[in-house]
Amino acid sequence: MPNEPISVFDIFKIGVGPSSSHTLGPWRAAQYFTASLDAAGKLELVTHVQVLLYGSLAKTGKGHGTDIAVQMGLLGEDPVTCDVDGIAQLIRNLQKDKELILAKKHSIPFDPSTDIIFLMKETLPYHPNALSFLAILSNGEHISETYYSVGGGFVQQENERIDSRNQVQLPFPIDKADDLLHWCRKTGLGIHEIVLENESAWRSPEDTRKGLVRIWNVMKDCMYRGCHHEGVLPGGLEVKRRAAALNKKLLAGIEYSGYDEWINAIRQGGNDFKYILDWVSCFALAVNEENASFGRVVTAPTNGAAGVIPAVLQYFVVFCKGDSEDAILQFLLTASEIGSIFKKGSTISAAMGGCQAEIGVSSSMAAGALTEATGGTQRQALMAAEIAMEHHLGLTCDPIGGLVQVPCIERNTMGAIKAITASQLALQSSPDFAKVSLDAVVKTMWDTAQDMSSKYKETSDGGLALNIPLSLPEC
Image 1 (tube, rainbow, N blue to C red):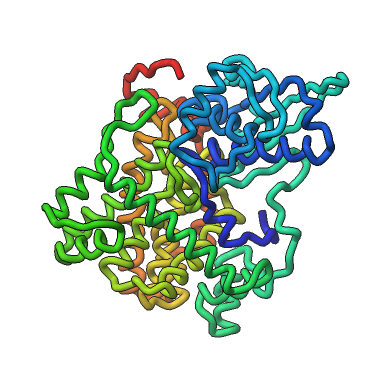
Image 2 (image 1 turned 180 degrees about the vertical axis):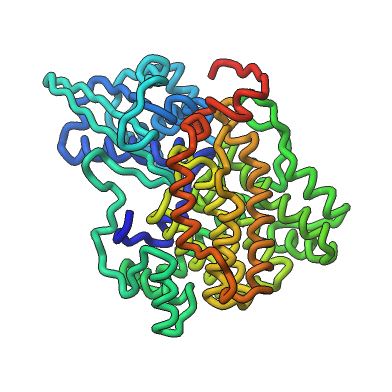
């Protein structure tokens, strides 16, 4: 949405997989609903709650864990702090007892099999990812609220902005890449420096720094967990985890304990092209295998594309000597601004734009960030972002079985590699001779999204989702 200030912490959110739009967004919507009931003094009057899922949320909600997410939100669990290892047991208990403690305060009867309704053939006009909460109170009053999960964990209530940032005035307002370049030229500041100045409208530089360090720590923990967790992903596709086996193969018996020793062990293995390529893929696989298992990840800018930014940033840290805290934060700040430009000028929702809106945007973010972090100019960074997206245009979202697994997990490896390639091309090129601007590719992506058939927009109604004959068990 143009003219709406977007913070780095709007683009990078800590949450739970497997989907920012189908898991994190509905989870937050459920929290907003219970909070509104509580604020009105009506929470303890509730006798019954139903949840209606529309459009893409209905069609791929089971595979994306939308039903689990709304239950967790209604229970009052928070995706940033909840025990991810305890989610399955909480849901099993709710299914068995058919009792829900609303916002951890008020017990009501609740049967997920009948009180969460998947309206496969109904879509609300504003956005394909819509859900409504219906509450009946003991005084006979009926309350209904509708929310839209618009991608990247952003949520809007019908006729009202939920994620509004109080319309703060930024020192450097930016809607387009040209706006960003204007401020860089006028001030002489780098992209990350412009972003840091804008973040001061919300909080102190020290608090921004602490928040970004926390974001990076969650990314690191997710990669490390994913590289040491074997087994089969949940959901019925029987997809085998690959990151742990690849990690073990690449390290060839080198012993280590903990993240820091792991990184040192990786560096011992050398610096040749194939080795680096394998590690970039391993980092991306690790994150998205965790994401597919209801692990804690960072939306970057979405959960389905959560592996691209960490993989490219880890590449920068391990193989490009980018392991200083300042360099890491510079990378994240630059990446977030590119993501904001796409959100304002196009979409970061696969239900609106297909996978170009997820993997494409994340690859563009990573390419621009890597370019500036490795010494490129502001124009080269924007050129790299453009190149990365240009070669994701038209990418469809067709998850098999509605699960964020095939082809989603491998696509993160492709997005990461394309980001690095785009960065290298931009660093070896002069933007003076570029034929396509970042703003042009943002507009083209939105035009493509509007032309794309709905069956390729996270509905599992087309593409691989139809052409791979698999039989999934009932969830």
